[in-house]
Length: 100
Image (cartoon, rainbow, N blue to C red; front, side, top):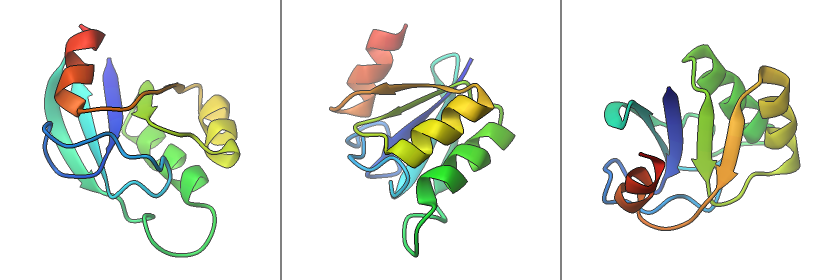
């Protein structure tokens, strides 16, 4: 299953981002392995970031998103796309161990 984690940095040593739609990066994992790092193109700018991120990750067939906080617009878009989400905080590598 593909999982995307909102991240403050480019590696698994990074912290989960507090901002779902405005996270600086998204790390995408499949079966626990990092397969892609995305610099979030919606991290800066006007409104609609959460909605746009949800659609971007849906196009990549992500089934679960982990971030510290999900806004209402992002939650609505994720529900529309059938993507589950979890709100967690901490280091990404520790969260990955709990997902196994």
